[in-house]
Amino acid sequence: MASGGAPGPAPPGPSSPRADAPAPPSPSSFCRLAARGSDLPAIAAALASNPALASSPDAQGFYPLQWAALHDRAAVVTLLLQAGALPSAANPAGQTALHWSAARGAVAAGEALLSGAPDQASLLAAPDAQGYTPLHVAAQHDAPAWLHRAAGAWPGGLAAARAARDAHDRTPLHWAAYKGATDAVRLLLVLGADPGATDDEGATPLHWAALRGHRDACLLLVRAGSAGHRLGGGAALGVRDGTGATPTDLARAKGHGFLADRLAVEAAKARQRELLRGKAGLLSRLAGAHLAPLTLALALSLAWFFEAGVVWARGAPPPDAPTVAAGWAVAALALAGCACLVATARADPGRLPVHPSLGKGEDGVRAGGGPSSDVAGPQQPPSSQWPDASPKSPLHAPHASTDVLSHPAFAHPPPAARPDWARLCVGCRAVRPLRAKHCGATGACVSRFDHHCPWTGCAIGGRNLAPFLGMLASFTAAAGLAAAVAGARLGGLMAALADHDRRAGAGGPPLQTTTPPLLSSGPPSGAAAAAAAAGLFLMFDGAVALAVAVLTAVQVRQVSANLTTAEAVGGPGRHPYLRGHGGRGWANPFDRGTCAANWADALGGWAGGRHGPARGSASPRGRRRQGGGNRGLEMV
Ligand SMILES: [Zn+2]
Image (cartoon, rainbow, N blue to C red):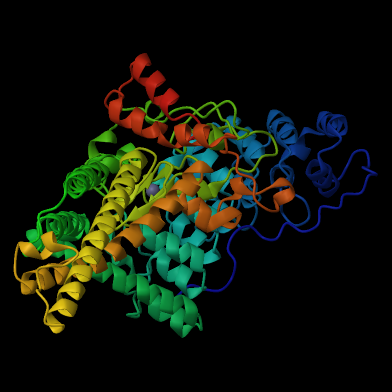
């Protein structure tokens, strides 16, 4: 298996140049001057007096260009190249200046080097003595910004990031996984690196991450493997390397028991998913829809039970006018709840378009499938599907691309700002907007993700929150009203039966009771059966009413504060944008100040998604409607 030694350039060593640069400086002194990079006139003067200095290595065999690149001195790199330094010059270990810039994530120096190179693609693909290209080195040293620039702007960078191989057939993803470079792993997966690539020992990146006990890297690789890459359905967990070991075996053998247990759980889940997918017909469809058909059946059965067994129960007296009216109201509310359930399940909750190359071409499958699979197509620019953020928000950003290579937060980050690489979804291979989350059950990122609801079989997001709340409210009202009517009916029946028994026991006329109409329609046994039915209904319906009422209350409280369930549960710990001043406590930037404004904000996505133009429409009207309908919800 992998050797334990850290690959990449030799340790750069302290760059503690002395200020007293001799004139003319020795190559070693000049290298220190170049590394420091603060005295451009002195460097220019030294080069003017002795141009050969630009190409002269120091005592260790390292070139001035390497030292300048290592310390990201782009101006010095340019000066050296103008003086005749060769970008392809390599030290005894075969490393070029570009290798050294990659080791430190020195993007500006790398750009300066490539701009002065006659063959940029060759320089980017040049291997050192161990076969590591600069891409490998960047992955080994967790330099995602450097990798991003290489893939997005430098010739041949994207292909090299995906598939460059070292002397042992290892890709940059292998090395990022081995080093636990989580950000680099995430970026490489989003860029299309193959999690199933094997090296000359038959090991995948997951083997390497498991070997070293890197939990986060392992989970990213498992998630990517189950989301449409070549190794779908968690199959990466079952791959055996040349020694016959799975990633789980390696983790356990190296003493990472906790990780091994976690990987075993993931493997079991993957097997379960495969089992369900493998079954054709009704079982598969039911599994896909989760409990939605059961919920519908339960609601309709309870409504029927209420009408037939409580309102119009045999053995009980005919209902009075208020009871009949309540019966109709319960039926209407139950049907409305069912309609809302269907609308919730059928609506697009706000799925994020997957990367176009993943959508229909590259792997032939689209993770998650579902009704909105067609929203992701190469012909539809993602930015037309994601409304701009509200200018009121401190988190406002002017653009909402989902492509990591063109997204401004990653392609053009503000100076000194570190991109939030955690916003990259390896399942969708896209940049997640704020508040969006990957729904593991449906396999897609969902805008303003609230939670995955097993009862409706779908994710609840910004665009189906309104019918979901309508369903909860309708079912709560129906169940509550039905419980009240059933309680009243049961009370009346019980009182009448008790009265009947008392009078029968006293030998008096049984029908001359205080409630003669109640039992006048049938024998006492019929009334007892009706009372039992009402009691049974009250028991079931009461449980349902209580559960639905609690869910409704929780949702009302959250929507009133413009929080999602995911945010309320995860809090600032899992959602950095909810952190207060100084990173402590809560501060909800989406709170509009009033309940009404928060409700309008939260439900705006439904208006945009339901009544707006078809998704992907590029008409100005459509964009305005979608943007206006959901302002502030789906920020980049
Ligand atoms: Zn996703």
